[in-house]
Image 1: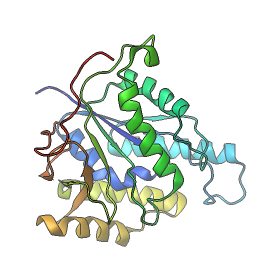
Image 2: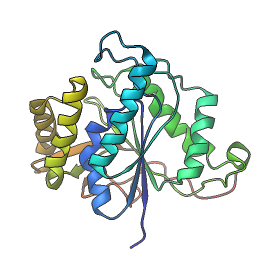
Image 3: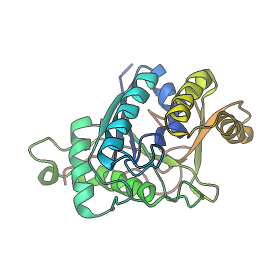
Image 4: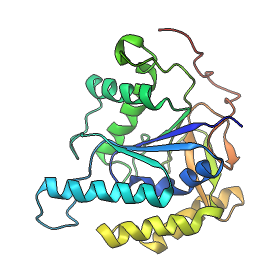
Length: 247
C-alpha cells in the first residue's frame, strides 16, 4: 500500500481538535500527517496579561504536545495571530511549504460563517492553503524546490449552511484520544469542554448512521461515509480535478 501524506493546514493551535479523529484515522491507515499552524495563537487571553511572545512560546509547546498525542508531525509558521491576510505573498509562502511537504490531500478551514468558524484568521488561512495548492505547481514560485504537481484534493471544516457535498469520517475507534487532546487543551487554555466534544461528534454522526463522526466539505471528491480522507475517489459530477501538467 502506497503511503500518503495528509496536510492539515490551520490558523491556531487547538484548531485541530475538530479534526482529531480524522487525523488519527489517517495515521491508522499507515499514512503521514503533517499539521501546520500559520500562527502561534499569541492573542489568547487564557494566560492573563502575559506578553505576546511568552504566550507564543507556551502555545508552541501546546502544538508540540498535541502532535505527540496525535502521533503526527507539527510545524508553525510566523504569521501574526488575528492579522492573517489571504494575499498573494501569504499564498506564495505556503506554496513553498507545500513543495516541501508534498501532500496528497489537504484539510483546512473553509468559508463557513458559524460562530468560531468565522474567525477572520480561519477564513484567511483556508484560502491561503487552497491557493497554495495551485501556486505550488509553478516552478518559478517554489524554486529552488521542485514544484508539486500531484493532485491534492481539498477538504474543509463544514459549516451548517454549506452546499458543498459532505464526507463523513467514522471516528468511533479514536474517541478516547480525541477526548485526551480536548482535555489537554481544556486544562491548558480552558477550551475543549468534554460535553461539547461528545455532542459535536454524535450530532455529526447521526445523519450517517454512525456513533461518532467528523464531517467535512468534499470539494473535489466523492461524498459519503469513509474510514479516512485519502486516497479519495474523484466526484462524479461537477468540474473534474485539474490534471497534472507543467505550468
